[in-house]
Amino acid sequence: MIPAPVLNVKAALTRAGAADTVRIFEDAVPTAAAAASVLGCDVAAITNSLVFELDGGPLLILASGAAKVDTALVAGLLGASKIRRASPTFVLEHTGQEVGGVAPVGHPEKLRTLLDESLKDHEILWAGAGDHNSMFSISYEQLRKITNAEELQVR
Image (cartoon, one colour):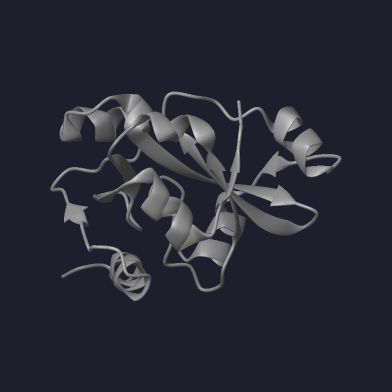
């Protein structure tokens, strides 16, 4: 049985005109390193979906698995005083997905989204698909389009 969050991601992909490339794995892939190992790709091609809190609301940053987001840099670029990592409860409330399995799409409501420009370096990206056991593949341009993300240097 496919979990509801994964079904939501699959539906969001097809609604947006993207291919449903979701793959479900027997073992969990909750980190970029674990996903890269299972997929046989560079950890930098893993797209982490990281939820932050900005002025009380959610901010989704799609960042390379090989990089740490510089929150001070991002806050400055957005003209915000502070961005902080969201709690697991906040993430679940705004995405319908648990930390470690958050996808770029398939959320109850549209989230403001930033896309790490360094991900352009990879022909194929892999992103979480709603739970700890699923991922989907997509190009940078398709990901930007389906998320309506703002391209930004996040590190």
